[in-house]
Image (cartoon, rainbow, N blue to C red; front, side):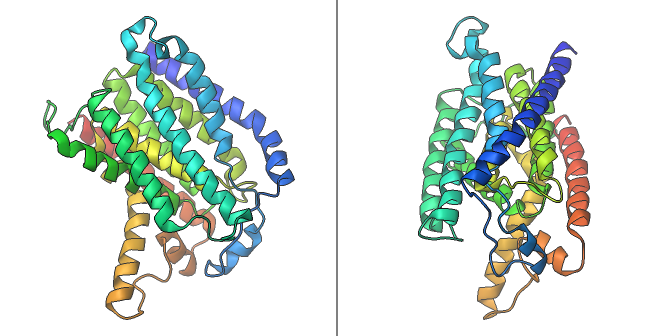
Length: 332
């Protein structure tokens, strides 16, 4: 119970810290004219978001790094605790690495040569794969994360070397899935916070104390970010935030060994990504026809007449119920 109370208290502290420095960050983003560029093909209602400050992922990343770093400083340098606290070092580094990649993409889309588009897709994907493979190797051979836990089995399932490509695939896929989810005010933040809280709960049940604290610090910081990001959004997390969130969610799930639960707990990002894949495949197979009105799928519902707030709240309700089911399945 002490660990649960401490984790929740840290979430509250992270929320306060993020909310306090949100205002100054907004002024900084506006000063450097880091406003979002809306693509022509997006729904008409998104035109009003043109110029909204982006790269807002920095708002929740910095407090997470500060709090997690301070709380685990002793363990991170190897003093006492048997190195247990080092478990947060990997997700912190992954979050920073993918945030930097996302920030470069955001910057290129605003001020670069490919204004409005960002980095070339192939270049971004190649960097993602390299980062993911390095992370997967560390998970398997450095911190010795559990290979796999399955519902109904009370032992670790060993899968050997194939763990590395599977883990890398999960990291890249989840990074892009959350990136696709980031299209409406508050949507990606709410969905990611719910999923990360679910895995934080699983980590607590596994006695992975430091990982659980990291999860709830991130959840608190995300709530602080959502204070400014809910409709109508004062800033947007951009690829800086969405790619960092997706990658760190994947790493957390891999560290618990419960990564199959991503299919349940992260059902909304999964649906967003699958809708894009289905749309592209169907478009090519039918010579130009569309399966959805527009993808990612939240745009499809926009064009069906759902309001932005309706979509966000309904998607979040689905994500919340999926998270509860996922936690339950992980303990079967």
